[in-house]
Image 1: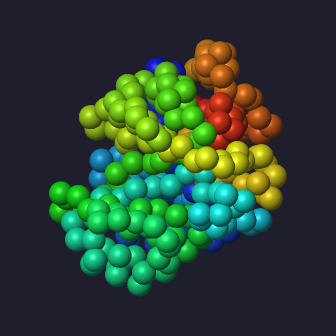
Image 2: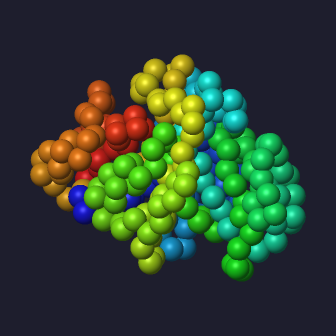
Length: 235
C-alpha cells in the first residue's frame, strides 16, 4: 500500500448545487466548503469532493465521444422510491439499467446507478472506473491503495476490503482517456490518495505505471493512472 483513498472528487460548474444533490440523495453531511471545493462525508467516513470546473463539458452517456470516465453506485432499500426521489432532486433517467439497478445522471450530467440492496437508507456502494482492460488497472490500484483484487472476470474487476469503499473497473470498448487539463477531454472525476511522505510515495507510484502530470500545490501533486485517469497524491 502506498496511500489510502481519501476522497472521490467530481468536477462541476455549480459545486454548491451538486453537493446539495448528493447530500440529500445519500445522506451526506458537509465537512468543508469554499468557492472552489466542497467535501461531503458519510457516516462511515467515505468522502465525496466537488471541484469547481467552470469549463466543465458533461458526459453524454452512452456516447463514447463524451465519456463518463467514472461513476458512483448507490445502494437503496426501495428502487422505485429512490428513483422518484432522485428525479425530484434534479436527476435525469438515462438509457440502460435492469431489474436491480437504474441509470441516471446527476444535475451536472455525471451518470450514476441506484442499486437495489439490503440497506436501511441510501448509501454509497462503490466508485467505478472505465477502462479498456480491467485486470491490469485493478492491480495498479490494488498496489496503490492496499486493497486486494476480490473479483476479476469478463468485462471487469474489483478491489475491496471490509470498511473501505470498493473500487470497480469496468471495461469500455471505445474508452477515451481524459487529456487533463484540456476541458474538451475532461477528467469528470478524480481520486485523492492520501500519503504520509510524498517524496517516498512518488517514485513508488511512477514505478507502478503512473505518469506525473502538470499541477501541484502545497499538499498535492497530479498524476495519471495507466488508463489515463488523473489522480492526486495528497498529504
